[in-house]
Amino acid sequence: MKKFTIISSLTVLLVIPIFFGIYTEYLLVGELELNAVLVLILGSFLLLLIGWVINSFGFNKKDIELMKNHNVVSALIGGNEIILWVFFPITMIMEELIFRYYVLSILVLTFHVERTISIFISSLVFSLYHIHTWFTFKSSKILLINISYTFILGLFNGYIFFMFGIIPCIIIHYLIALSLYYNLYRKNFRV
Figure 1 (cartoon, helix red, strand yellow):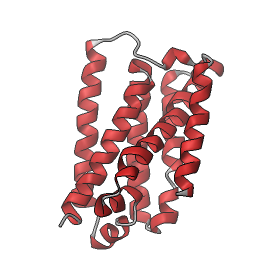
Figure 2 (cartoon, rainbow, N blue to C red):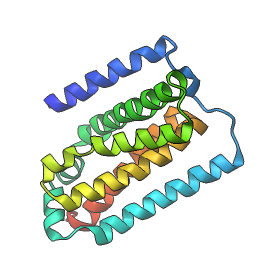
Figure 3 (cartoon, helix red, strand yellow):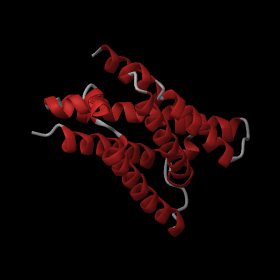
């Protein structure tokens, strides 16, 4: 519970500057274009498909047994609603605020780094942040899969951030991550 208290507190602290107008250029949807909407739909579908392939072919029995200890998977197994519907979304909000809202805004608006380079840097830092999976699972394969997938998610959400703002990034991150963990649970742990 201490971990979730820290994440919740950090999320509140990250939201406060927004009320003072910090980087509000990327708070809401910009100009809505058909190409951007198509990228949103196709990219989300592609991420879900990659996740399905990873869940179907990426993990062996030992990996799956280790993944049982992941907060979301164990919450699904044990029926812990507060983790699924409160703390897990708060974690997604925190991550998107840090790695999309602040990192991308600081790089583009403060340091005038090109958007493409900023998205790459943000995605790289976001994927490296997930190195904590090594300490949880002690599995190089799970770590490599997680870092690779989060890098791709970071690239996608970086693009979405500049086209649609931070809110769709949070929603996409939450729904895709929940879908991945739910499919893992459904395939391997559902009784």
